[in-house]
Image 1 (cartoon, helix red, strand yellow):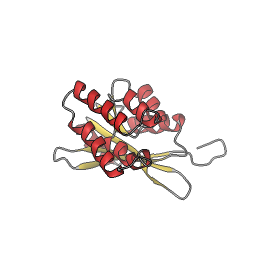
Image 2 (cartoon, one colour; image 1 turned 90 degrees about the horizontal axis):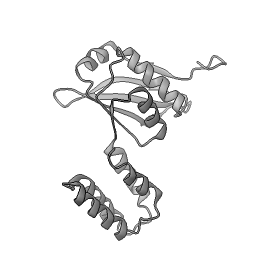
Image 3 (cartoon, rainbow, N blue to C red; image 1 turned 90 degrees about the vertical axis):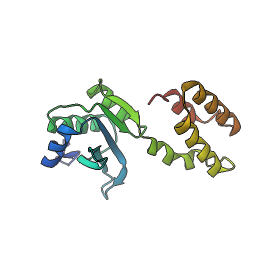
Image 4 (cartoon, rainbow, N blue to C red; image 1 turned 135 degrees about the vertical axis):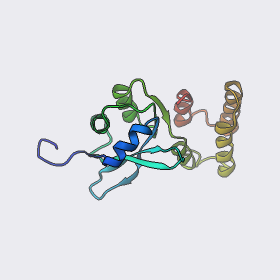
Length: 180
């Protein structure tokens, strides 16, 4: 609650989620891009994968805003509901506030960007590029099909030059954090 008694953040973890998390806490996806309600409160979902490669719901939250304080509160409350057992790895959208909250609360958890979110942004990031569908397919291929670092570096540089993306901040930042 805030100082006026208004709802700020709510975290919900079902008892079945707690039991599932005990066994399946190796890789978690935190998604805050899915939905915003009529009060402009983003919905955050925590999802894992079971031994049958099925998605399992491990909790959710309504957030007052997507800032560092809210993410820290949501993550710490979610972890507290799960006996403070940190996931081995977590995937999220490319959000600086999420990254800072995870680094602060889960420093030993491997942090990665969700490739689906990156690929979903491609139409916007390549909107001015001719042959948009071809450039999207080439980008996906260079990310998914590069066998080693040297091949990735060569293909990345060729791609950036081919589509004249040198001045595009998003691609530059993505490259700097390619390990994620």
